[in-house]
Image (tube, rainbow, N blue to C red; front, side, top):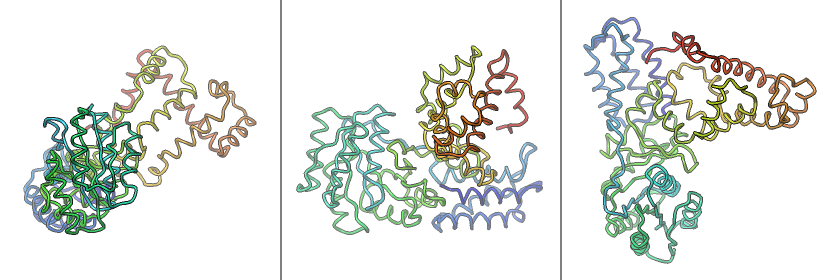
Length: 450
């Protein structure tokens, strides 16, 4: 998400270099570029006007202090205004009510409500340590109830067995009573969607809201629909007291107009974003972090949090101990590290959180993907245990067998062995006394200051 906007803003900043002060004259063309960038990102026109005017007001007359270039000063203004536009801070779910806390999921058909309900259930179970019950009140879409039941089984939460012949309000009432009897902390209610907003749909959701009195009413919307997402959110908010928005399919949206528009137009915060099909692909929405990513500053804090959640700590500690003792780093260890990386999540998504990647050529970014990691693991798996332990002894005939066994080319095997040799040298340097300090000192000066 935001790829196109991020690239445009990077170019805009470069044009401001060399100016001693931000004035009305020298940022007029910059503001025009900013306006076009936002419109191309499918940001709602009223939001574009508001945002550009606020940036102009804040930027004009801004002194460029010694430590900042004019481009950096402008970026600071844009970052602050982007954060304000999207809501300043992460809005948490209201889970402080007496249990069960009811979360009502609403939205149009195809927006991803059912999968988002399952993702939210897993999030609450694993990160908030809540006991969750799910129920589907969608009696209109074939197999909707079965779909939610299958998803619930996959993530290990209970799903109330709804009867599609019942009235949705009756299903909701029974599920709420069941959640109370079983002492569940949270009840997540999936509702029916339509291809468009109609009176029957709104009447049904209104009745469900009245029966459940939910703490959270979350509007689930496909971010790829752009301004239509904002219009739909407004229509639902007119019928229901929405408390927040979940943006889905953000991994397929290179524009990001919905994320930038929905808070300003509806007054409702974006609480979560979904980026992928996996049940773990749901993250809280942090406006300040998103603003930093749009401007190419990355989201290192979010990256650290995600790695800490998913990394195998015991395995990592074993590796650290092995290096500390100066024991050899072989292809078995390398394969373990690859598996750890693949377990953390989509590599492209992780890389997008690193600062400064907007300047990296796209063809280089394309080489960093999960497919390449899978190929590397396949090559190592095709080796014998002895070859993994002593890769220096791998001969040409061995390489042909390894390439055939992994479905790759001999060049791929040679490339892996060369990369591994370079990594092995680095590991040996780290394992030596003072090696880590020397390594960090050698890197100082190459890494730009934060």
